[in-house]
Image (cartoon, rainbow, N blue to C red; front, side, top):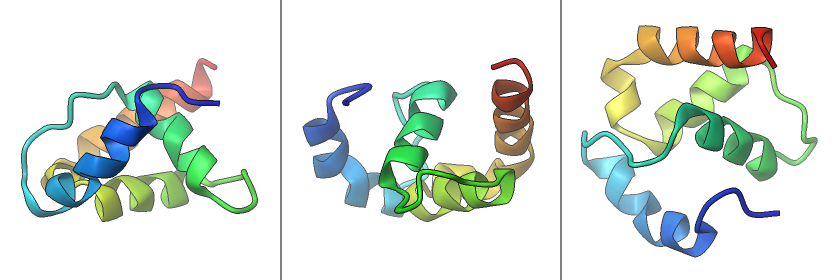
Length: 77
């Protein structure tokens, strides 16, 4: 199951880890990708936030916004 162009995401993963550019993906798509990347397919909000930070330099400086977006996604899902 691919939510967005996974090949494109994989090719750009290193770019986004190093550059603080906002990724062109929605929080929903990135959260789903975090679940798809996990081995157990279960993640806590803290683990999802860590995935965002580990994969995107942009979210290291915007951590508070990420937490709220993830919380809203989970709360209203």
